[in-house]
Length: 368
Ligand SMILES: *Cc1c(COP(=O)(O)O)cnc(C)c1O
Image 1: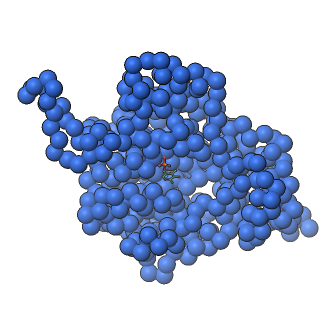
Image 2 (image 1 turned 180 degrees about the vertical axis):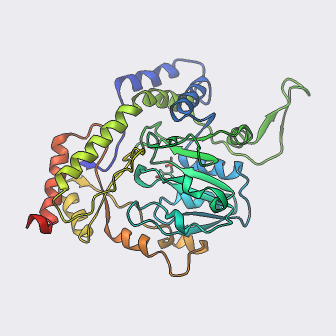
Image 3 (image 1 turned 180 degrees about the horizontal axis):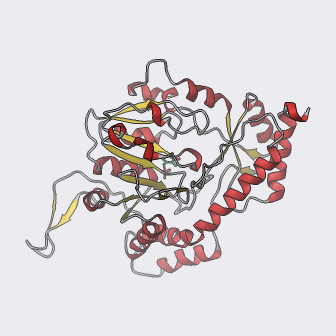
């Protein structure tokens, strides 16, 4: 069985977790701080706040940014439900925006002016160019959902440096660029936002040592969204391999694109000059998607569809949708398929995947 994505855990990763088990701190402690610094350094952000999941990180980011009841926040319609749910968690209303048919990310030209917020998803790990939203086109708050895009680069620096956003959220689920089993993190360059993110993660607790050494005060409803030191030790060890992971993902993507180049199939877009794709997903498009899915699965290859669009789910009845619907999203949904891509995927496995694709999808005009 070949999954579409999976973790890569080394002997060093395992040793790092075991070492924490022998120590004093199991939940949030010194390893979480070290992990936060390592990510902040890697992406070039001033602050990093770890969370128990990517979804919790998004919840914290929306709350810290002050998104509240009745605020309209845009996001992509072709994404994981967490990108829209985080808007609901704080009482906001998701406005679903259609995708760019090439990048499959939100079409930034279609983001209306004067919005309170935007949750910008870097679909598959190809970074959006958020600089396009400068000036009066810029929503008051821009939060990046970079669950796919740790390790991706833009001409303005790594995704996560918040060059053109307020906050950037990552996920460390096992299929994501690096893993802590479950885990997430928010980066920002704003110290107030960082302080709010830290309060929200721990019940809104604010120590008040001027009153008494044990005293603390709570004036906001927070959560327990802490990452554990066990997870952070794994994450810290994984960060050291991140660069190699992304290089390997890019190599696998070029090999696929080379092997599938002659077929009548739409390959993923390559990154523009100055950008580096993270290749969390390698998404091909074909009208024969359902057949291809079935053929791959009978061969033990677990290709996946990313995603059932947000507005197709009954829970999204409350979402705002532009007049005319979301035609690019609906069309892409009928054609997309994510082929296996992850560090450690072997050449022979890539060969097997491409053979099944070749058996279903015909050779293009040029090859006939
Ligand atoms: C994985 C993912 C999330 C949620 O992350 P979890 O760590 O699983 O909670 C959010 N948005 C997108 C686009 C994702 O792919």
